[in-house]
Image 1: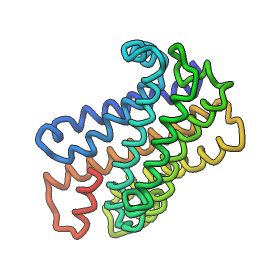
Image 2 (image 1 turned 30 degrees about the vertical axis):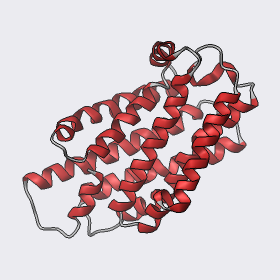
Image 3 (image 1 turned 60 degrees about the horizontal axis):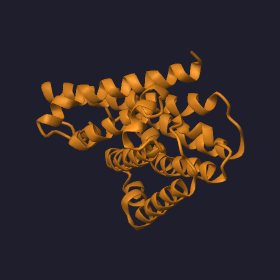
Length: 246
């Protein structure tokens, strides 16, 4: 097993575990959007694993529709994560860039182009991450588009998250969680930029799935801190921040 695959499987395990931890709260009606976000992260990472992808794709036609679903799930992850993160870290400007007029136009264009280039590609048989079709220009553009929207949202939220990690008004667990989330989002931006200009080799797996781990662990720490605060409440003007990401 390579380091990249190990990180990939770790990301799947951590995201799935955290989704399960949040299930009881979701059943009670607490922050179901973040539960949905964690489920979509798990689905996205899971469909990047050959064992899962090759089992799922034949069920939906065997022409790599599962990969298109992966892309759409990932876009959904970043919409939820971006909006909730921007609200939690008090970055109204970032929220507007994500779900304001500009953000919705960006999302609409990316989704339309993603579907368009998928349809334009010749994908007759199941292939995890479409590796068997890397020689097609349409597949290369499709893959690039799949990285651009996450990078756009990550660029909007990583700075507010990192700023929150240095804000001494926040509880220490919240600062640690925000810092991990900010670093993870920054990695998404760096990875996308590097992938546009260079062949990253093993880092094509190491960077994005390391980012998944950091963001998921950061969210888990903030969630645990919020749960503890609910059990042992202490008046705080920052309570709304915890609710937005927990």
